[in-house]
Amino acid sequence: MKNNLRILAIQVLMLASFVCKAQDAVQSVYKEEHRPQLHFSPKAHWINDPNGMVYFNNTYHLFYQYYPNGTIWGPMHWGHATSTDLFHWKELPIALYPDSLGYIFSGSAVADVNNTSGFGKGGKIPLIAIFTHHDPKGEKENTDKFQNQSLAYSLDEGVTWTKYNGNPVLKNPGIRDFRDPKVMWYAAEKKWVMTLATKDRITFYSAPDLKTWKKESEFGLTIGAHGGVWECPDLFPLQLGGKTYWVLLVNLNPGGPNGGSATQYFVGQFDGKTFTPADTKTRWIDYGPDEYAGVTWSNTGVRKIFLGWMTNWSYANQVPTVAWRNAMTIPRELSLKKMNGQLLVASTPVKEIKNIVAATPVISLNPSQVYNLPAQSELKISTAQIQDIVVTFSNANGERVTVGYDKQANQYYIDRTQSGKTDFQKSFKGRFVAPRFTSANNADITLVVDAASVELFADNGLTVMTGIYFPNATFNKVSVSGSKDLKIKLTELTSIHNR
Image (cartoon, rainbow, N blue to C red; front, side, top):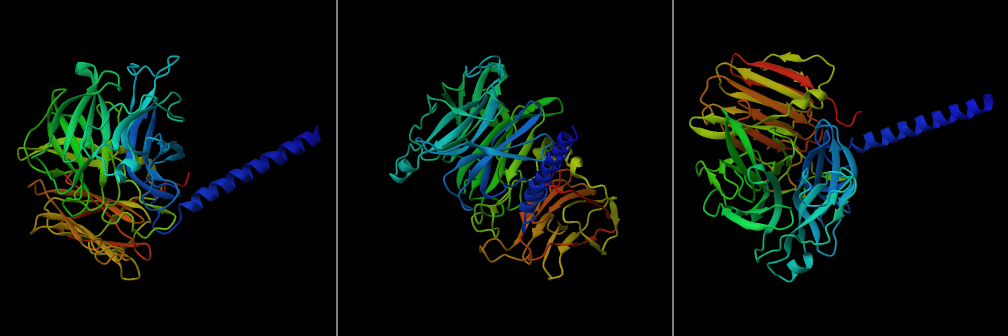
């Protein structure tokens, strides 16, 4: 008996040692230079567009464009991660691999609760991935039909996937850029609606079963920004004052407000067939240089949660990281606001950010004084009478990033001109600006700061900017100056890799 207990005790100690070593190994992966501590990034290799974002059985699924054999763009797979709180992610095995029909380009995922597809078995609700098959051979032959839309389904809540043997379900009619299907259930007509990027516009399709698609309408040929190809669209309703409006997101590369890639949006009405915008102004979800391919999670009810790729196609392949390349923004809550007669989409950090607040006390800062800056933090600034506001993050090397508000220009800005490593691409260095949309005297700014990024949310999310940077030493000092009545709160946030 004693020997058995002794053996059992040894086994328990060995298991505990193994678990500790595994945890240490995981944590060491995320301690590389510039590694995000608040944002999702893969353990290794290349990542771009968020894909297949669906909420099911209290779990958020994040799929993403992934190349597992290098740190620059390559043959696309769908990587996969899950979370129950939008911050702590579990990276899972690759969900979808390239096949004879091509690479697995961007798309979406839905929970087919009514089993309209017929993929459900034994009462199990199928998760359906709708994605673009990109045929590199057809592209090389310079055809216009190398991108087609296909399906895969999962009956074990996204763990394993089976590609539909009838793929592709939507064949290319001869449009070179024909990709990135975002699918939603349109309950009023009991049908699925696909929002598809088609060269320089959006094309809407519908199907009762996710398999038999018919064209409904087109939008955008003469509306919005057209500096580059339209990509990664999204269509969803938002409520304001008891009325339903529809928001159409369209990602654009290049042609963003600060150069390169960015996410524009339109607000209007959708009747199941046609999207009609409220006006023809060009607006952006994020005016900073480093948010792209942003879309929302499906199956979240009235709540709309947005996530973008935190970089820019102008330099995404060149940023100075080693083991991995690129990350996602923090998840953001979307809402509608009316400002000076305009319908605007506001973005704020999701409420789940409270799950990563550190136990250390919140610090009140005095203007113009220099304070220690935690490695990752949230800075909240408010004023009753807005004037110039200057927030400076710095290190002992003299490197710095400046974020703030320019009263005379009526613009928010991120300046990374002296931020450290900037010579890997000519357009990276610079000062990037965004308009202020309210004329109110009072103002608020929330800054979410990570090892190599800052996200600005001003005026309760009316103006949003994201910027990445690569200092040679971590920014560990912060100072705030400007308006006389500034109230400044600094909250330390915990690394998402520490549990």
